[in-house]
Amino acid sequence: MAATNIVAERCSVQWEYRTARAQDSAVIKKTIADYLESNDFAALSVSNEIELDVPQFSSHLNDSWLAVLAGCGAKRPPITVPFGSEAGIFERGRIPSVVCGPGSIDQAHRPDEWIACAALQEADGFMSKLGAWASQTGPD
Image (cartoon, rainbow, N blue to C red; front, side):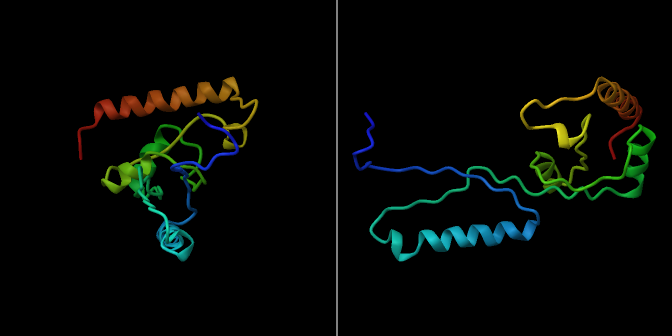
């Protein structure tokens, strides 16, 4: 049972953050650890655990990978965007990765998001060409 006029036996806080630079993550982790070890929490039993660490993805593609993407119809060279992706996990495992998708990020992940049909057709063509390239190519 919960009510607004009781003192809870325990409290749990789950939160996430995304950094603009990889080194910012260490600063955030240290700031939180220092705060939880401060006198404000001396009388409490506090635990702090990281449930999932998705590293920042920096897309270190060499010229040959960029040429493959361009040959499949990529419109521009890779750019940095401020959102999370599993690609950082792949990159940490030294698996070359690229994050791509149709439309503009300016229209995505917001109320009334949308993608133009032409952008879907263009993405379908890109993925078809990339699939054809992959089916002709052996592992590095």
